[in-house]
Image (cartoon, rainbow, N blue to C red; front, top):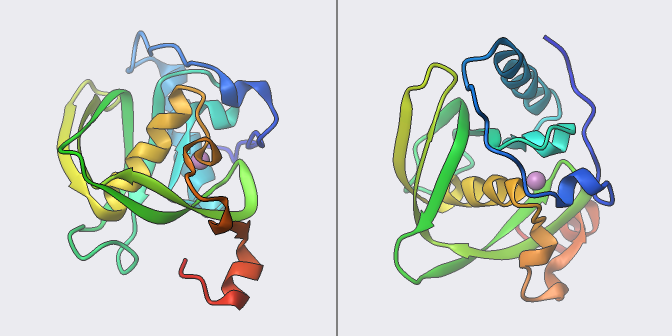
Length: 175
Ligand code: NI
């Protein structure tokens, strides 16, 4: 296993539409997923998409830590989602704070669908199909966007809520 270098905003790999994974069980994909999970934990972060480690492939890893999530959420351990599909349930959107390992030290409030349904597979071909809300839904939408070359500032509706994490903390903005 290895800690991977993370691409930062400005690198063109982050703006690509990623290609489907043809063989989720291939040895190089399994190694990539294991390394991405280790990199996510090391950062630390709650999600990491393949283009963030210079691989323009449709897969991401994520987790929902305990104690941080919306009351509607339950904690979820390290999970990979390969060739995911994400769709909103209903029209409701919610604002929430997001950061990104490719945009260090910054944070912003971003509107996202309040509820989603998603589907993908793991490396063994097992189908993962869930409905999500709260923090869980936000993480999935953020990571899924990476696979289409979309970074969270492109989703923002109010740039007053975009700032450096330490300044926002001093100002008392919720994290
Ligand atoms: Ni990100």
